Image (cartoon, rainbow over all chains, first blue to last red; front, side, top):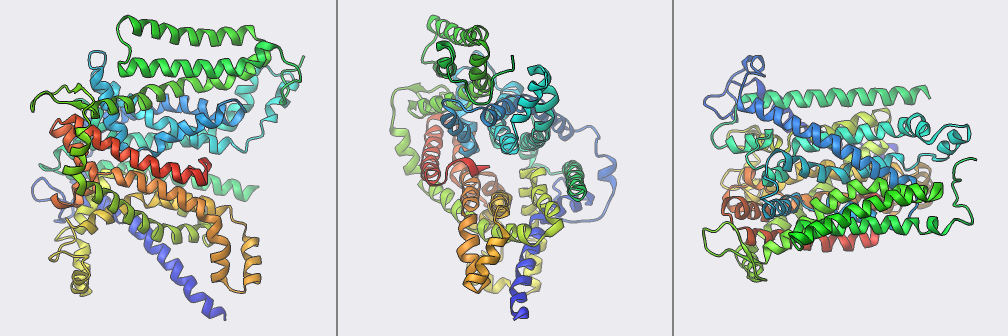
Length: 267
Length: 360
């Protein structure tokens, strides 16, 4: 009996392992080909191993500049979206008020609209008002904030939904002013959720291609530049920069997981 | 005097009672003004008047909050918190949908004109369907197949993480999320290399003598994987699988294991227990995952561009090409609008049965 049950059990585990390998295949390719020395300008066929690409990771190039531009856009848009989105999340989770259900629905809509619709429609707005605003850095930041707000609001709200709001009451009963209550009680409790949302929306921004493409004017972000130059070249430096992002995010994730596991074993 | 209690006090002043109406009204008026000004429905002097109404709505809210006392402030607080973000969305998400609609009903005066004139030209919609019907079909078709494949891959993976992983659960979940952190574009380019004519996938298939059978069932085209419909569908599946795994995992995680054990005793079989207990409880996750994969997949054009070649383009490719390359904005806007209308209709039907709570 036991053995009969075990066969499908192992099959399922193997399937899950295969699925994880599938998820990581392109990531492995990105890292592996960062050590390739391609013939010509397109790094898509394996030739021979070299460390040169990593030595020149940050040598001046259009790719490095575009990479820095992406980080600038992401930093600014994430800061704005995290502030606005967290305020919405706290309003929705903390208070019961007229119109909450309707506003909630409006908030979900940007999450369910295809990127190409958001990108092209926003571009028509900017084109209609071309005398007020030119497409460029500012419009890309505006666009990124637009799709990040709902994302931040939903993520933070999910994290603070189970939060015990009577703690605020307790603090005020003990004589804390509303400001002090917010900074000493509410803020520390919602901060982890806000940080997680900020991190993920930073990643969304840095990765965005479709919405940026429609609203960029002549701004070159990292994905935009890679795509524009792809017919001509795809140098291994792209793999190196992508590997660096990967390395940073895996380390962040591992720190998070280890801390969560540590907390769980302590409690 | 302690601050307001959690339950509203039995008798509040008239102003306080109406404070929430004031808050909601001010939000509505401000959003409406932004939409009107943004779409160009009002301009010139009227726009100045409209913007002063917007300013008055904001100032009025502050005045009511200051004059109305603690209870009014408590009732107005959520609207104050919502306002900046909601107005951002009103101006940069909802207003553009109106300008998109306007653009889709405009006409280009000549073939080389850049600026279109609004004249209720519904012809753009018939052009969209007649010239790009095949792209619409491929867009929705590829997205549908990719969504089904995402469930087939994502469900077992989420199941193993939720029920079998034990202390490795968080780590495995993290591994599923890691691909998010490398560029979507570069991952797709990676598949172009992996699936390419001299890439490792084809080499392995040849080593295993699988090219013949795969060619017979149509997965390969003249010995190539790249630039077939299956490479596009495979790319879409790959890119959106994490969006399927996470919501399914969230719903499976909530399943009480004791319930499954009880079901195993009652139905005397794990397969039936799975079918009768676990599957129904995980359906909200599957539906949420379906939305989160199908919607972006239907509008995607990167996979088709890098993996599909010229004969497998999706509707997203056509919109991008008409909008940014051909400069035929009216037709691009019409296609965009149709894409959104079809997807919105599907989402409305879905959320009617499932609510919005489980979407993220």
